[in-house]
Amino acid sequence: MRRSTPILAVLLLASLLANGLLAVRLSRRTEPDPIAARKAAAAERAGRPDESVATLKESLDAERKKNEELRVRIERLETDKKVLAQDAPGAASGAADKLAAFRAKLKKLFKTMKDPAAKAGAVDPESMVELTDTMMEFFKLSATRAKDPKTYADYLHAFYEVGLDGEGSPLTADQSAALSKMFQEYGEGLGRIPQAPAGEKLLKEIELEAATMARVKSVLTEQQRTAMSKDNMELLAAGNMMSMSYVSSQGAADQIAKQWTALYQLDAAQLPQATVAAQQYVDAMKRLNEETKTKGFPFAQQGTPEAYDYRLRSAREQLAALQTLSGSMTSAQQEKLRTQTMREVYMLDGAATVTVPADK
Image (cartoon, rainbow, N blue to C red; front, top):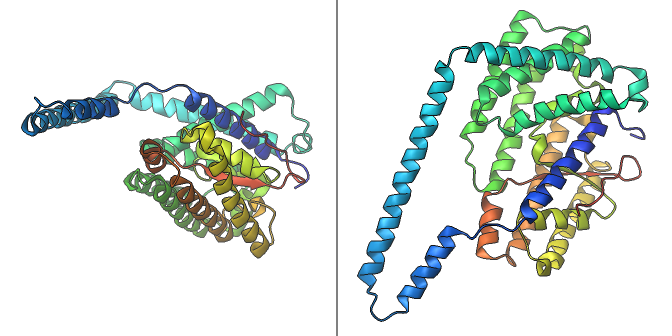
């Protein structure tokens, strides 16, 4: 993989943008936690002799009641919003227009990918911007796929349909119907996965994706499967690209530790512990690479059972390292670890690919 394909080049760029935005967003000073403030106030009142336990219990019950009422109201508003969106005139046609526009962008994307000059890295700035825009649109949808499984299924179906049509091996009517159903069930399955703990959520998402893509391959012909494996095309249909981090194997532990510091809002004094935990993950992945005789994630095997096994092992090793780090976390940081989306790490061989610098 001495030369990065347009797909990989844009993936690396997207990862840099996502990591940079993550670092900026999470490094900003957060607003005081209202729950923590109420707890502190309650603790202060508890120290006063004139404050009874009964009064404190009554106050706590009142707070719980208010929170429950607020939660019910939010759920009702969300339901009303969905109903209004479905009943709004032109909503269906608007979605169809967006899907048609996405198909047109995909056609241009696949055409560029097959261009020998583009494969050699000679992509003009305007085309690169268009490529990135199309991919980012798909990535953003992947990030919200569990909330809008129907739209995600339609876009994923369009991706396969347009990609295979451009390779001269179009889907049959039966194949198209089967894929549409599979992708719809995939999106709905993602929506049923509990949001926390975040580590378990990531593992279940990868397992569900692996099972779905195995079913997809069983529907496609050998020629179609080969077509989808060209030029890393299947990378676009893999996982939630907005929660993936591409890091160079050179200095990987430092890069990962800085990402964890931003993601879980660790203090500067906790960076050494984060680096130790990150090194634990890096060492585990080196052992895996030796077992599988690979140099980082096996991009050439994307979509295969071996690639999904690699991703699962990577996620489990990262989760184990984070559990080690959790011992030095505050309760608030541990809660972020439990609820914050866990980023899937892709370690790349620095000698063979573009080097991704560490977050600053």
